[in-house]
Image (tube, rainbow, N blue to C red; front, top):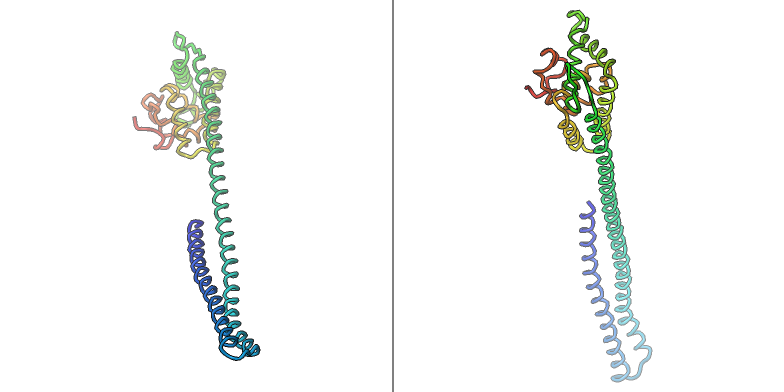
Length: 284
């Protein structure tokens, strides 16, 4: 819109310049004609006839004054054109200043966006590193052996399977009730390991969700997090999000497809997959 206004203003300016050139030529022409007519009157009334001052005055007042009065009108018009040209110049300057301010603001917003993204990435990768360090420090005894680091989730999943198998819940109460009971007992036994792990993972996804990134960028960072998760971590996350302690995590896990690559064949019951929307998983 501003570019079109500038084009229009410059077109008007060019038209005014053309008018000024034309009117200037007319003014000088009228002035020259007035001089010629005046000289002619002087020649006639002074040199070729008897000296008649009154006649010369009438002649000059009638002929020369008329020409110069017309030239004066054109000079007034020139002044008007000059003012019009000045106003157009001011309008153009205002538009150019506004464009410059807009460009400066865009540059400032881009710099702020870059800075915000850098701050986000610093926080994100710092939290991800702390989370990975927490995973590496895990020690879980299960089935007669010690599981260390990321392998600890295999032991934790075995322990959850044991609690699920021993959960005293009638079949009529459904799969969800049995999972809630089993996870409650499992969480009570392994709260120090599981609670710290899932709080860290939840907060990483939460800062992604609350950031000012675009939806596409948010999914890229969430995919980076998901890429760090082993199959056993995904299986345990699956049941954590169905539990009471993971109810806040469930919508974020769905939003960012964290369970997309969960090995559903390793679920404790194949019907457990039906507790999530069909779009949650790759069918594996």
